[in-house]
Length: 245
Image 1 (tube, rainbow, N blue to C red):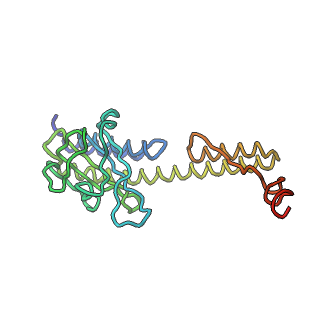
Image 2: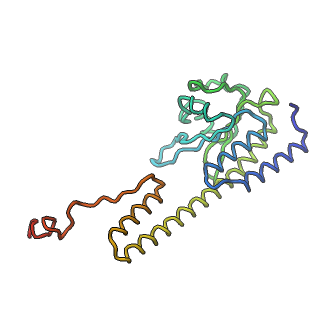
Image 3: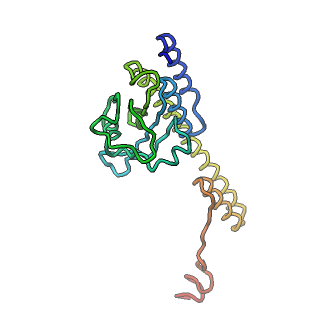
């Protein structure tokens, strides 16, 4: 398959930017998946992934990856892979530490390459580019197995840099939408609990508390555990049969 001419490539890039900017899904993961698929299509590579940087909960200087969002592998292929790299060592750690794109004609020949996990598909040509959200590193976009050339070109690097910038904006917007949905759920939950408490039915109020907690946590079930004896009950703390009664 011949490489597209400059005019066709420009059209592809503009279409990809519009697609990333206007086509995010209902949640962050769907947005990330859309970004990865779009990047793979524009540079015509077999595999692509977006490695999401782990949260800096403990202030560590070096963080690994907490999630991989992939394109080009079936769910069955993904399930067969023993593990995905965590980005704390090897080639992916070098990409995380770098502030510039990393392009390799064959990643397996790089001294930092430490091998693939069991049942991982073979990969050779490689391009890694950082994705930033609001100026902070969010993760890296990885592309492998260029179809129309032995390796990724200077033009590919320029194109993916543009898409990485657009991806950062789309990810930031997706985060804002998720935060707004969470705030809305909290407001709805608080209103439901307050209404139930004012109704004067303790049993129903506890049911509402359990259901709203389950909903906010995205859990399969919600429970409210009560002490076997409440203050003031006979034999309970402060009751007639308890200490001081």
